Image (cartoon, rainbow, N blue to C red; front, top):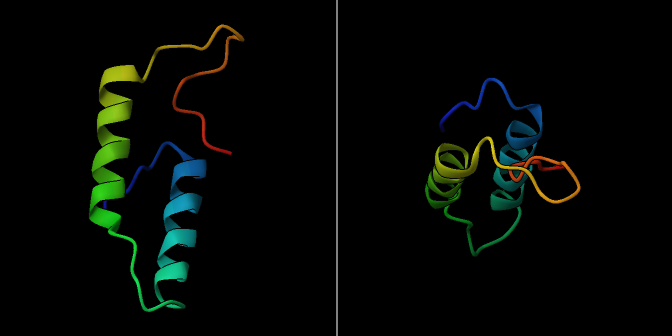
Length: 59
């Protein structure tokens, strides 16, 4: 799993998704989720919403 060392929220999300994978038969493809997060951060990392909040802000 990729480590998004500077983003606690993303790491928490990935940990929760991993726990879900251990609970259900149908699994979430964490590689695809990580790849999507990587590209969002790469291409939209500094963009902000009209509210001033960063685009890549996961709570």
